[in-house]
Image 1 (cartoon, helix red, strand yellow):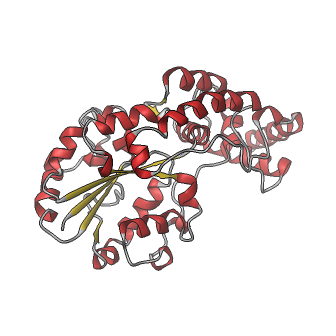
Image 2: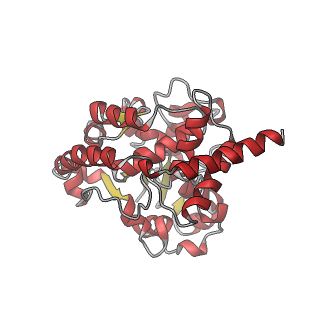
Length: 330
């Protein structure tokens, strides 16, 4: 029986790690019944398959386009007794799921389709997305972001409130076609997130049998408060990499190598908790969540050792000195 698995993210849930490892180990995976297509050199994710992406970067564009490539994949593998795994977190963006029904239809040559969506507590997701945005430009300050995500349920065209995301999926897929996975549980798997995916897909391989890429973790984010501090100093301009590195170094020197910072103040965290704990209770009753037995636990600042308001004057002085020394070096 042929099957296609559509891994739609979400963002900041180790998607790049999965894509890099599966792309590098595609030949080994195929020996065990899992096909991870190589669609374009050096592009480990399948971002070129995303429909309704009006400004798709050229680096992702495929010779046969999105629909043409999806059709070919369906025709080529639809009759095989194997599973095709397609992965792009961009599938989960609001604009890209507008054509979810068309996406389903293009994959109709497969006997079975499964959509996998990994979700994490919203406060973790938002602060990780903030760091990612900071790589390219200076984002709004955290207090503004908290107001925005509570008011709109979105950040950077990404769903923070997951109920509309499931509603959009429900327009094209039935509950038994969608598997929701909690990010925190996947991280605790004996083989990590990759091992959890291999187990779920029924692949008789362990994560440690795959060739390692980027030491097993790709696109790792710097400490959230290092990004914040660099942004504050550089705003309204984009913080340069050297400043981000100095901020991370200053954070470790001031608070120790094991510091676990949170982008938000305690009060902002409570705002997010109050709002999204209630929304997540509703989420747990969604037919797709019930089918997967999925529920997000109430927010807990588990492991956090430093909230934003706890950044000390000595930290800022230390970082300022580092920046001054850097300027003297040219």
